Length: 506
Ligand SMILES: Cc1cc2nc3c(=O)[nH]c(=O)nc-3n(C[C@H](O)[C@H](O)[C@H](O)COP(=O)(O)OP(=O)(O)OC[C@H]3O[C@@H](n4cnc5c(N)ncnc54)[C@H](O)[C@@H]3O)c2cc1C
Image (cartoon, rainbow, N blue to C red):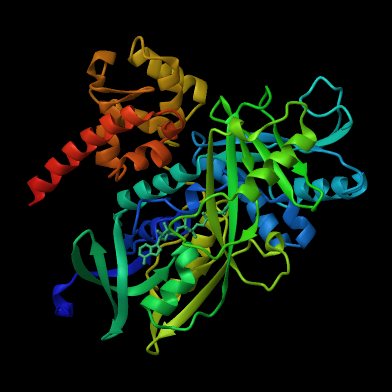
C-alpha cells in the first residue's frame, strides 16, 4: 500500500502512544504551534499510565539510589502540577513508621531533610518526627514515625486532560489506531495506521516513539532500526481493599527486603496497597498480578497494621509494566526511574525521538526536554508554556468545596456523591457537562451508581469513549461498583450510540 505522498496529510510531528508521555509531548508541541498527530492503539492510558500508584511524588526511596536529578525535578513538579490540575491532584501526608533495624533514624531524618529542601516547595508542609501514641492503626511495637508530604493523582485522568488540551490547541489524536509501519520516504515519515478493519497513511516531518513498554519493540519490529537503549520491563501490582484505617494519611512501609510499600486512602472508601517490582517477560497486553505478589503485599501490610488482611478482603487488583531504561542494576527495584530521550536521524536527517522510562510526575518536564531536542528541526517553535497554564478543569478553580456547592446550587437534589465525583473528575469543566442542564430530571437513563446518560454522552463526545472499560476504569473508577447486569445495560447503550455514529459516518 503506497499512496502518493503529496495527497496525504503532512504533520510536523507524529507521536506514537497515548500514555502520559506521548500525550504530554503532543500537548506541549501543539501549544508551541506545531501541527501534531497522535495515535494510540487502545484507549488513552490503557496501559502503564493507569496502573501506577497514583502519586505525584519526589520519590523518597530514590535518594538511596542517588537519583538526585530525578528527585529534584520531581519534587518541584508536585506544586506545579497541583496548581495546573487541583481537581485531580491533592496533597497527601505520608507516615513512615520507624523500624530501626532497617534504617536508622538519623538516615531517615537526613533523607527527609533533603526531600524538604532539594526541590522548590511553597505550599506542601515540611516533614516532622512523630511519636506514635497507640491510638492509630499501627501495631503497638511501632512507637516512632516520620511524616512528610507528596501528592495523589488520578493517573488516567491526567492523561485525558492532556489529550483534551492538545486537541484544543489543534492536535489530532486518535485512539484504537495502531501504527503498523513507518518509513522515511522523500525526507518525511510515512506512517501506516490500522483502525479496526481499515488502514490509512499520514506523513510527518518528525516522529516521536512514546510507546512505553513497547518502545524497543516498535524500534526493532516496526521501524526496523536498532534500539539505542535496552528496556527493563518491571511489573508492579496493587491491591484495592476496603478502607484499612480511618483518616487521610498514607503510609510508607519498609519491608525486610528494604523495598517500600504504600497504603493510600483511595476514593473515600478503599485503601490502595502497592507496589511490587518483578521482572516481566509475558504478554504486555495481559499483565496480571501473581499469587506471589498478593502474598507479598498482604504480608507487608500485616506486619505493620493492627487490622490484618486476608486474601478474600481484596476487592480488585491491577498491574502494569514499568518501561525502565536498562542501567544493568542487579535488583528490579534499583533500576533507574529517570527518563532518557534518544534522538536518531534516520536516512541522514529525518528526526526520530524515542522515550525510555519516565514517571507520571515528570511527564511535563520530559515533554519540555523532548521539545528542546526537536527545536533545531522546528526553529519557529514557540516558547515553553505548560508550567503555568491550567489543564482542562483547573481553570478558575477556587476550591473543591465551592465547586461542589456550585453544582448543588445549580442542580437541586443532586446526590452529594455525584457532585463530589464530578468536581473531582471534571473540575470547572463540569459546567460544560451541565451546559443547558438545570434539573436532575434531565440526566436521562440511570446506569447505576450515579452514572447517567448525560455523563456517558459527554464522555463519548468529549473524551474519546468507545467502550465500557473506558468509562468504568479510566474516565472514572465506577468499575469498582458495577455488577454484570449493570455493565450489560451500559454496554448496550454504548453499542447503540456508537453504532449509530458509525452508520451516520458511512
Ligand atoms: C506499578 C507502577 C507504579 C507506578 N507508580 C507511579 C507513581 O506513583 N507516580 C509516578 O509518577 N509514576 C509511577 N509509575 C510510572 C508511570 O506510570 C509510567 O512511567 C508512565 O505511566 C509511563 O507512561 P508511558 O506513556 O511511557 O507508557 P504507557 O502509559 O504504557 O503508554 C504507551 C502507550 O503506547 C501505546 N502503543 C504502543 N505501541 C503502539 C503503536 N504501535 N501504535 C499506537 N500506540 C502504541 C500503548 O498502547 C500504550 O498505551 C508507576 C508505574 C508502575 C508500573
